[in-house]
Structure formats: C-alpha cells, structure tokens
Image (tube, rainbow, N blue to C red; front, side):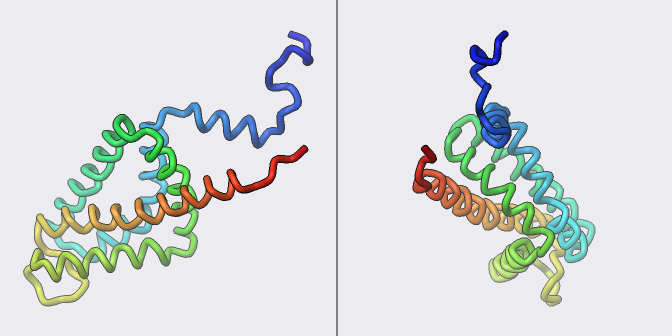
Length: 163
C-alpha cells in the first residue's frame, strides 16, 4: 500500500500508541492496572495482618479485581477514565504516599467499625477485617484514579488543537 493511502501515515507515534491503548480490552487493561497498583499495598497488607487477616485480604483483592472486571462491562467509559488514571496512580508507588495513606485510612476505618480483635493499631486480625481493608484501600485509590483520569480528559479537551 502506498504511503499516501495508508491511514496511519503522518500520525505521530504517540497518537498511534494512544489509539492502540484505546483498542485494548478494558478487562485486560483493568487487570494490568490492578497488578501495577498491588505491590506496595500488598507488602504493607502482609505486614499488618495475621493469618486470618491475610486470608481475608486475599479474598478482598480478588473481589476488588472481580468488581472492576464487572464494571468494565457495565460502565465502559467510566472504567476507561479509571484505568487511565490508574496508570498514573501506579507510578506514584515510586513515592508511595497515596498507597500508604489509603492503606492506613482503610485500617483506621476497619478498626473504628470494630472488625479487629487486637488493640494493636496496625494489626488486622480478623477475616472480615482482612476482607474490608483491601476493598476500602481499592475504593480510595480508584477514587484518586478517577479524579486523575477526569483531569487528564479535561486537559486533553482544553488543549488547543495544533494547526
């Protein structure tokens, strides 16, 4: 095919990459974003839970993943915004402030609700507490990702088109 008939001719590499990401199935992209955001919360979660809390935490992570996969089918555009912002949140693990803050806020919520047995501040020692901490952490990080994704879309639409 001659270059003048190629629909991609003249486009920059960044535009081609952005179109390729848009074509990625949202479920695969959601799974990748969850995996990218998991290292810091997982290490901290393993540090603050006991055996039953770890079991609950594993179920909580899987439930957050499953709920996101379901949302990819129900709220397609919203999940695209969350996924785009989720990549930015994943990069913040290099300076893990948002992940650490979300985790400790989740532990505080679970302790305030009475789903832990011990009096130790940072220990989650129940199955239900272990389930709720990753769900609350995920909810906080998803809200941050959605805000970042919406901000990215706003900046993209406000940027003047190049002539």
